[in-house]
Amino acid sequence: MTFIHLASAIPLIASASAHISIYGVWINGEFQGDGRNLYERTKFNIAMNAPLRNPDWSYIACHTLGNREQPKWLEVKAGDTVAPEWFWTERGDFYTGNHVGPLLVYMAPAVSTGPNTPNIWTKLYHYAYNGTDHLWADDYFQKDATVTKGHHFITIPDVPPGDYLIRSEIITLQEASHLNGAQHYPSCVQVRVVTDGKTVLPGGVSFPGTYVLNQPGLRWPPEGTNNADPTAYPLPGGEVWKNSPGGGIYGLNA
Ligand SMILES: *[C@@H]1O[C@H](CO)[C@@H](O)[C@H](O)[C@H]1NC(C)=O
Image (cartoon, rainbow, N blue to C red; front, side, top):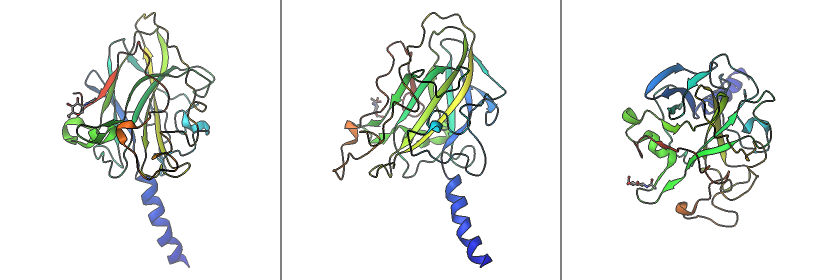
């Protein structure tokens, strides 16, 4: 009996840890140190980076520690480049395998009621699929991984000073032909903007709220089809804010 239990437990642990998350953040090319349980709101334990599959769940905002302030805030200025570094099971091993899909980045004021407050999120960047070289956003992370180190980046907009959350999300689509099959990996980093910008984030996006189960882009290929042209992939979460200075992915844009 004991043997059977042990044997069946091992693959569960292995698969629970084999998913993607952020290890730390680079600001203007300088590494800020391991951010887990320090300036990143994601719970790190054996199931640390398991995906979320239900967009109606409160964890869709920032994973499991979304409501909990972490001890450190990263100081940033408008125009700074903030680059989260993703990993698989340990730092430096970013590997997507069959986990492919889009990358989306949002920002919100770190309001006291937590990240699930309606309509506080503004989209700064998104990227799905490149029809020229046939790569998804997260394929670029592993393309020449020694150079790219699993990074994407955004540029901090000219917002008023204060505490904000930057929410990076990878959605992987390998099981998305089923209802609830899209896997969400959201992760929020705490930043403190110290410059005196005047451009307030417009908000308009809610987590939960904006993503709807079974919507095009979360159900992929769309219901009733067996395959679909990835160049027509509909990114969820609406348009990128017109005042966002943008972002990119090392391996694609830098
Ligand atoms: C797609 O990939 C090609 C080749 O790497 C690159 O030149 C191009 O800029 C990419 N297109 C977009 C929209 O990112």
